[in-house]
Length: 486
Image (cartoon, rainbow, N blue to C red):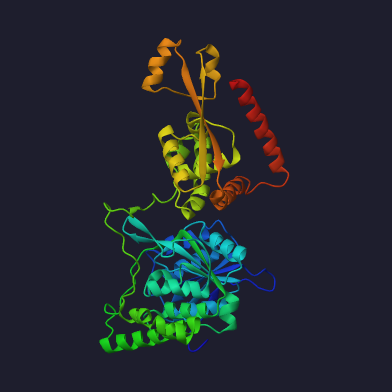
């Protein structure tokens, strides 16, 4: 018993015998039986597996506690804490004290996370040696979603640079919530950081302000990895009096002012004081989902690669080709989102980075398996981004039976068509000589990593002996097909 709170631990492993997990995912739960399975399932389906999941049942009166216990009985990574109802902040504090991970990730029971969420957060934290990772998210209303974020360029920021962005939108959920971030447990322990359980408004934002005060740098990740569903209860809907609302806002504002004085210093704080004061008057904003007819909204499910289960059930001859393509699209999708690219653009850029011979548009369409009109659109977008450029070459040939094996694309304008009649029905072969530009380097690197993830998925349960054997058979199959088609 801690502070009068009854704690019951389910399925707690002996930490002296097992390696501590890299990530502790903390999920407070209260009367969420209708949605909690969706949330927990999304966590257990993470591509990244080195985590523990701490479920804190905050005195639920429905079946939430029993559902948590059922999950814990089937997975050693899940630990359940049953406690009296003392609120979400107290639930998080208890979980933080019990967490064994190097990093902490927070999820709310109404919501869910993308399969790559934890892996991307950990990769960013370890690769860039940063103290905090912040990501974009999806705002969900019914069957529609909108991509939400604030900082438009991905990369590493100093504490001061990050605070400058916060000044622009002082009450934005992007900065205030816990669930689109990854924290270092060592920093939280070192400075004894906790949620303020005495307030019910912006308590997570206050925690973030204190935490950021102790950071060196912060990595901004522009990939939406979290699905935020429910607008949490406002103070007015909780029946909170105006006097108490003002008192809580004043408390939070004092934290907010102290934060900017700490980050900027007294002199620079005075210059930004009016912007800081905006926080007191601005309402917390999670970003609404615009009507379906307006830009910026899509149907839930359209943001991710999905497979048609009927094809799998039918066992068609095209099944393997279909699944491989969908898996590759799924892997490329994450990297593509980071650079605001469509899948067609990602495919094309990756292909050109590995095949820099001269190609016609028809060849590109054939190799990548996309219609030529999409290849044309993707080429123009990649060029406008400064990722690629090309030179066009032309050559004339007399028609012959051997041209059926030509790898050059045939084009004819009206003038060429008229000329061909007079010159023995000639056609102009046009092909493109591509150049990859320096600005594409990081995008290509991420797309190559995505391609490697695809291979890791394929070989995920192979033994060391099975992989070379499979590759040998695959090479023989490729040779058989090549010899047949040539």
